[in-house]
Image (cartoon, rainbow, N blue to C red; front, side, top):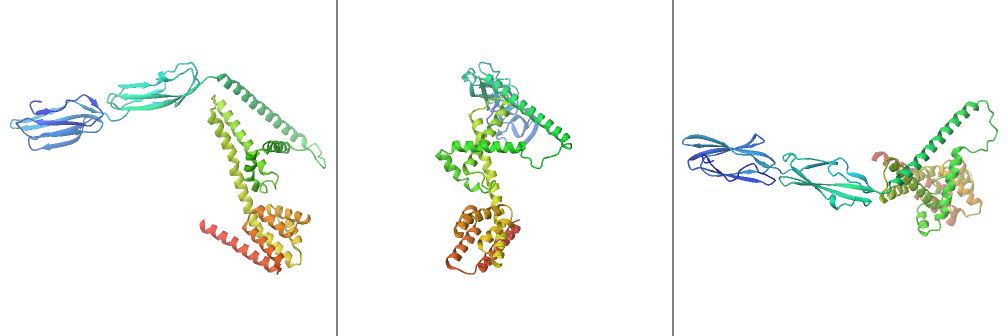
Length: 435
């Protein structure tokens, strides 16, 4: 470059660092221009009106060339440099599988699962792994690390999980057993469907008895399920931790089947659902020809165990809302009974007959407790403790004061009726405003 000057660097070497090229013009150069070309496209043009040197900075990935047009007394001289290659982009690693299942003792081709692309280095990349540190004869999970570097010095890494199995024969046996069970269930359902259709064909030619004491299939299934729940409850009831846990579910006893299940029974149902979730997970993984690790066994059971809590909470919420809504109707009926001269016992009995649902069941319990000789005040206290509503506590306190001090029960219940009606009205207005 003696005609127009000298450059501090020659091109053609690739790097991932910023490059500074210094141009020093010759003494006879009066002014000059330098043009920066990136991938053969002009990106910058600078004019220098004197003979001073220039620092040309190349700091982005690309293939650069510098075109210098120098002006002297003899005319214009043009020079284009060799290519300066800058590559700051890491190689891109693409894996076909993030998890590879292998049998113990087999070899693994490390290049069969990977493809690498690099914009500026093309195929000139180096792939290294830690395959020498992995024992393919040992079952379990091991991590294969790919390290890819290009000629500019950029490095990318990617991990692959090698799932090495040694007891695949157990998987085959479990698959055969599960598939056999599924086939048996399918055959049973087909036979049951055929029997039902055959029964419908001959049903019009038969005469039904006045009383049919036979139980349906679903009744027998429900009875069998209840039997399993009670047996599990009797087995786990002896543990102190289970007893502490069951106390949290005692509040649900009235919301489910009118007190059919106890708190321990709810825990038993959670255990059953947990095992069903685990069995379902095993079936899915078996059909996918995969073995389950300890986490894949624990997580489905835990999810199934706590899944019922959502159903319990929802049913209990609906139960409380229904009682809260119907309690006003019960107080109106009781107040009308008092106005007609009836007693508290008769009023409670009439509410259990006139209303339906959860509130009717609660007043039936109260009527039964009164017939067994419990005090009115004690009966309403037990009622308030069962449903745990502020309105029920207010009703119980009012009756307690009336029993101790006396007073006009009609006025008291009329006041309670107006109060509850106003509260329900305010709640509805709040919901509408919130909506």
